[in-house]
Every structure is written in C-alpha cells, then in structure tokens.
Picture 1 (cartoon, rainbow, N blue to C red):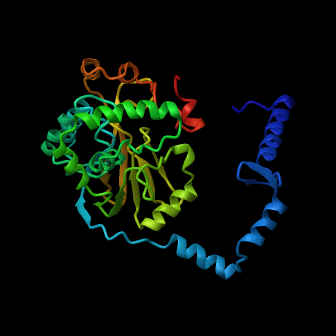
Picture 2 (picture 1 turned 90 degrees about the vertical axis):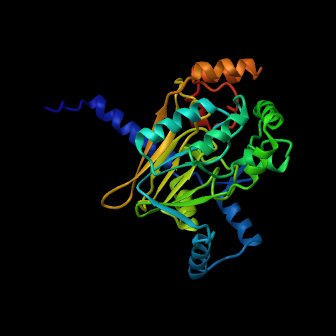
Picture 3 (picture 1 turned 180 degrees about the horizontal axis):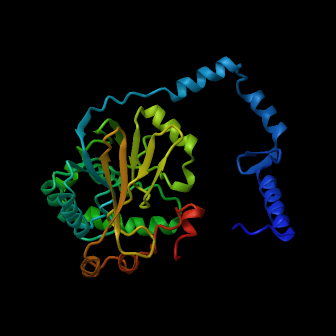
Length: 339
C-alpha cells in the first residue's frame, strides 16, 4: 500500500519543482568570451559581425555541416566478436593478461586504439605481444610523437602539473623505445572501420576530429555525438585517450563508447583495468560490454620501482587512484577521484 503524502511532503515536492524550474529558466544572458552579457546585446553583435540566414539557408548550412565526410578507409570484417582496448602505457603485464582473455572469449579479432607507451616500464616488451596476438593497432598521440621525434607526447594537457608528469613519462619511453619500434608506430593508420555483424564501427584514438581530443562522458553531450556520427557515417564510434571508460546509446539508436585503457586503473579505487567486447546480435546491431581485467599489478609496480619511475605512478597501480594527470578531468569526473 502506498503511503499518503503529508502536507510537508507536498511542500517539499513543490519546492523542488520550483527549484528545477528556476535552474532551467533562461536568464537572458549569453557567454561572450569569459563574460556574460545580455542576450539582446550578444544577438546584435552577432548580426553586425556575422550573417543573417533565412530558415532555408540555415537548413542548408546544417545539412552541409552534418553531411558524411567520406574518409575512404576500407572496412574490415565482418566479424561476430571483437575485443577493443586502448592505452597500453607500457603495461606489458596487462597486455599479456588481455591476450589470454581474448583466447578465452573466442574473439575473431582484437584492436588497440593507440598510446602504447608512457607511464609504465620497459616499452620494448609491448611490440612482441602485439605481434603474438595479431593485434590490429591505430596511432595514438604517443605513436605520432615517438615516430616523428617530437619533444613531448602531445597529450593535450594544459595544466603545468599534468605536463610535468607527462614529460617524465614521455622522456622515459622515448629514451627506451627501439628505433625500429618507433618507425613501426609511424606506419600505423590513424583510424579503422570494422564491420561487427551489420554494424559499422569507427575506431579512433581521441576523437574523429583530433587525435588528442578528450571525449569525457560528462562533457560529450548527445547532440554533439550525434553530429560526429553523422559526419563520420558510422553506427558506432569507439575511442580512448581519457583513460576512463563509458558507453552511451543515442536517441538515433547509434552508440558511442570510450573503451578505457589497460595501462592503468580507471581512477576508481580498484586495480583492475578495462577493455571492451563487441558482439553482433542475432537480430541486428551490436552489444557492447565494458569488461574489467585483473593482472599482476604487484609485479608491475615492482618493475616500475626498479626502473625508477615516479612513485606517484606506482601508487596509482597499487591503489587504483590517479595521483597524476588529474587536472585535465572535468568537474564531474574529478569529484569521483580520491585526490
């Protein structure tokens, strides 16, 4: 039996409804640079400096902007089941564990979305494992930088502390990666298209727009993602780079997933890392499962200490909490952090 609402409950419900209405109401302001200005003033400035479009012209502009770009990348497959992961970060132990999981799950193909180096130890142990597992790899910002001899990882950080630790990581990896491995990285494609069942999947590192763009769950609204998929003419978009996994089904029925990384934990207080399994459905479409993966993190931490990598990196491996590269996190993701 439902409990009867009291006047106090009703008053609280009304208060919450009014608060939601207040927050949703337009305040008559527009963001202009770093300040808020009256909406009328903003519109007048736009009309003076820009173009005034008719409804038909506006519709044509939208159609042109969202039209498929046509990247001419050959579609691989079709496959019934694939494993996709990102961000090895030199974590050869997690990569070895993942390849064992590929065999256990019976995947038809396995894909890596880049960032083979950084953070962890012994970068040259990664390539033999990729070859052993017949892993189909694309370039991340690390491969782009290492193969071109760049001085930094082009990770996309803006904060000095983030960049300090990123430079320590990149310097270690650049100094210890074989030249043959670097040349191989430079020959990797920037994107792949894969058919899983009847679903065309576009795989990129950061985003289709930029190799080091961060697609965080909280800062990637559905309309923006719909436009990306429309422009790229795909049913499913897979990315990595942020280090945090998430997935979403859009209003159109298309899907987007950040597959996470296997190089370090997902800043959640557990030592597992994450990958994605895609399986074709019998009635069409594809099922995406984001899967935690356990590996010998204690052995990795010991190896990192022998290599004299920063203790902050070791602490992340042992505790599951990020201690570096935190400043790039949007507020919602940062509130879930320990630090």
